[in-house]
Image 1 (cartoon, each protein chain N blue to C red):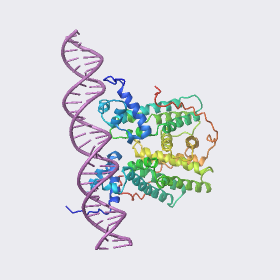
Image 2 (image 1 turned 60 degrees about the vertical axis):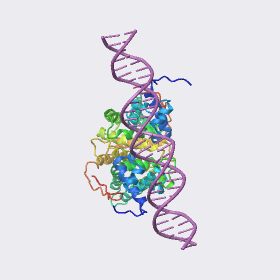
Image 3 (image 1 turned 90 degrees about the horizontal axis):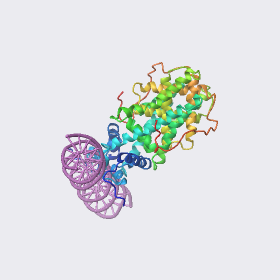
Image 4 (image 1 turned 120 degrees about the vertical axis):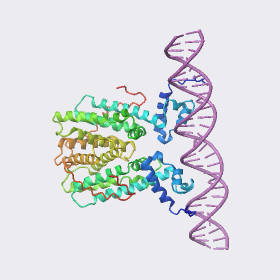
Length: 222
Length: 222
DNA sequence: CTACAATGTTGCCATTGGCTACATTGAGTG
DNA sequence: CACTCAATGTAGCCAATGGCAACATTGTAG
């Protein structure tokens, strides 16, 4: 056996790297700090020196994930070309990432709205929407899209793509390919933005939600 | 002390009910079969008689959740009124459910794409999209929406609303209200479907994904 | 050289999920 | 009615986990 030096040297990075592997192949449930330590040939309490508890490790993992994902998204948005292909590129970057790292994405989102998530984590998760907003505003100024509240449109686009990413990550799409879904979504969104809102239902307060809103306890028997 | 009878009588239901409570207030991580048993004044192995393991309990919980949610969605789709308000109603039913039961929804989706999810669970999760498809096809026949592949449109709508529900459930929207998001999303989707697809980018294969796909590990299983 | 903080190790504990053997109950069945 | 037996609940055990505290090793700053 290669006699390990007393100090691993890069334990923190090694833990994160290995955790990423384990998570993607065994899910978050399959992640054990002790097993992680064993994998790295280190004592079972060593991880505790770098991460207060399991959640701290997951937080760090999520932060890494957001950094990586945002890099791809901004990269796609800054690519050369017309705006619509760039829009599709952003969507692809997001969805592809979700498909490549489904569990990591789930961790990213679950830790993001954890009660005590770091500010950095909380804000870095919103870079994507900023990128989308910039591109939409640019296309509006160029007359390519109908004028409108770019903030609101970006929110909707982000939300829709988030849904696509989620479903793609969960291989919810039995027959349909991921790229088909991505293109179908961007097509519809872009068409809506080109057309603008002829009858903005959002303006009216409505309020007649008509949602029963009773709790789950008394299940409505179909 | 009320001397408990040896047989609880409704342990299974009681377990599910209590589990729902615990989950919503402490998350899935805070759910322990043994604590559940203690809460119900029953031995620690009693739950094992009704649920093979923890996952089986979560599966049952998810099934209940889908049933309840689908009941609301179909209820909204069958409400009287014009099609667009009904479309919004479906969206509201989904998003409101997500906000009311965020953790349950997460459990629903995580168990749904679990490797060994029951067929019933797998298919019941797709009722929502069927409802949306029916409504869209109806509106197309009535000339209210531009003609097009209703299956594809329903998929996109479902996906987008799914994203809205997810973000709403995770209280991702700092300032924006849930209803604002729902209406903004349905507005854009409806506008896109009214306008139709002038330039269906989905037809062309494109393929120039331009996704670097490096970063974060070397995983490129495509 | 020495004090000290960072890093890693060993030992311990309560809790958990899951398993097996056993107890109680009630519903059939002769 | 007596007997069987499956369903349900109990008690005890086990390995694994996360977290904590005490101790060991190392590199470094004063």
